[in-house]
Amino acid sequence: MIAGLNIAANAGAGRRCTPRRRALLMAGALLPAFLPLGPARADSVTVVAQQALRFGTLVVPANGTRTISANGEIADVGLLSIGGAPAGPAQFTVTYDRESRSDRPIDILMQVVLNGTQTVNQAGVKGVLSRFETDLPGSIGLISGSIATFTINNCRERRCSKTFRVGAQLQVERSQGGGDLAFALPVTASILAVD
Image 1: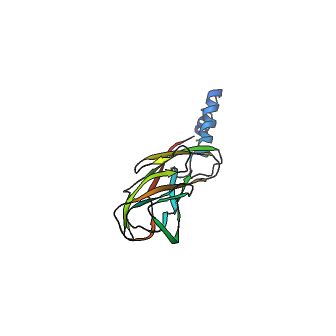
Image 2: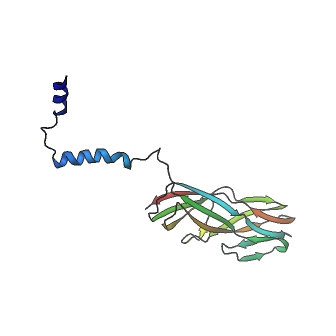
């Protein structure tokens, strides 16, 4: 019995440990330290609407337009604005979550899409939203279904965000009445590339 143990213990003793064999043994020993402990998690993006597109309180005698720019400028044609609710662009925050604690700087190329119908019927006012614009660099005009791209540069945190605004023109025709007009715009975002 002792001789058998001796033979088994000495079976590999005659082999030379080549550099390649040593490297393979080390790699096999270190590999579990670099494997993830759980399932891999994908990066994610969320859009939070912080403000609706607000046209304020309007009286519409016949027809007209109110334009709210992305930077908040207001232009009226054929409408009466009365005190009440404030007017201003819609505001959104897009947040990228890398789902890890790495602080490696990355650039995230993203796109946002304005979805949905743009006809309105609210507070006795019927009309169409058009001439959408945003303050995202390089994306001045938007239409329903159009895509605007932007980059979040040098993201070092787990979550990085970009806030942007969307303005539009409300064109009202052959309607009567008036009231406080605010519209929630459906916006979605997706990740195009992470570098």
